[in-house]
Amino acid sequence: MSMPWRAAMQQALYGPSGFFVTGTGPAAHFRTSVHASPVFASALLRLIHQLDAALGFPDRFDVVDVGAGRGELLRSLSSRVTVGVSGEPTRSGRSGLIPARAGSPETLTATAAVRPAPFTPASGSVDPLPAAPVPLARRVRFTAVELAPRPDDLPEQITWTNAIPTEVTGLLIATEWLDNVPLDLATHTENGWHYLLVDPTTGAETLGEPVSPVDLDWLTTWWPLPPAARGGPDDPPHTVPDGHSSTGSGRAEIGRTRDEAWADAVGHVDRGLALAVDYGHLRGDRPFGGSLTGYRGGRQVPPVPNGSCDVTAHVAMDSVASAGGRVARCAYSLGSQREGLRALGADGGRPPLSLAARDPAGYVRALAEASAAAELTDPAGLGGHWWLWQPVGVPADGLPSAQSSPTSSERR
Ligand SMILES: C[S@@+](CC[C@H](N)C(=O)[O-])C[C@H]1O[C@@H](n2cnc3c(N)ncnc32)[C@H](O)[C@@H]1O
Image (cartoon, rainbow, N blue to C red; front, side):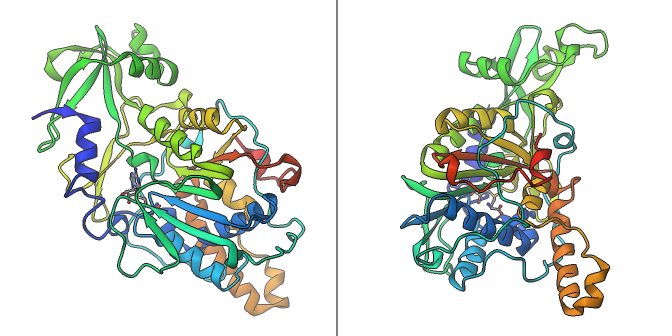
């Protein structure tokens, strides 16, 4: 029986036999930055140390990973913090057979509604951070927030829960979480916006009711109709499910649920930084044909919401940022992963040849690190993903400054 896409996704991904809560986990089906290279965790560790200093070395420093998969990121971070690693990349990434989920070309051209933030990472070349009076390893608390059950082999220092903890002080991170937050789809007909319904067994769509006032409000604000849909001659009307006439707007992915999910997550941070890493788009550059797709076993497949595959749609990052900003009441910053990682010292660039003569072993190590970072910073792939920096209550005068970093001034 047909149902709204949001309900179908919820059931397919998170129901009793849902795709994400049963089976081996996301890494068996697609490749995220977390899986791609240990350079990602090393860069985040550097960010954690910077944030720790900016917060004045709090008694408890939280690292909360929302949508933690099977805990891969926290396993990596916790093992490094425990042995006192500072965040410098130390080994090369594995090469993977499984491709990343869609790196979106539209993320590369977008320019919109992005404001400067008071907190951005210090570049890798700035002065060393002050020493913590009590080592981070003794103050850090790792929490994985995940709907799937706790993996048997997860290190015991990682807390596993299905709800975001309150009063987070530190870093809340969500990598490729929001694109899996279920959402409704709509199409614009001669009678205005209507929901699209889907049959979960076949993926066949039919036309549903007119969208609710709250979804209409979201669409009007964040998903403007392209000129053709407003009566332009370029895109003649075509038929949508149930024989209605479309105005040429294609399909809209109503991101309100992602806004609400992110605002709720940000609301759990007392002091620190909420960082969302995902593929997405801005208002001036929406994918009017829609971006909904599926992944299974390393392949892109039709998004049939029957529990057999991932069902994902790109994230309206500006709308999410705005919702988070209303809760955080701090300016946010939105840029690419490439920019974010570069600011954290992982730039994917080759080391200078002069290093080879001076320090051959160091040169080989740096070369391995550069190639490990390259996939993460490739603008046509993972490097084109968005990083939304959402600071909460971080004192401006205690913040590391990125003003001297060329990457930070590239913010969109
Ligand atoms: C695409 S995977 C990303 C996993 C990991 N963060 C990574 O980057 O590899 C999305 C994960 O988010 C989890 N998830 C989705 N909604 C969630 C929620 N409301 N609370 C906790 N976890 C959630 C899913 O179960 C899934 O494991």
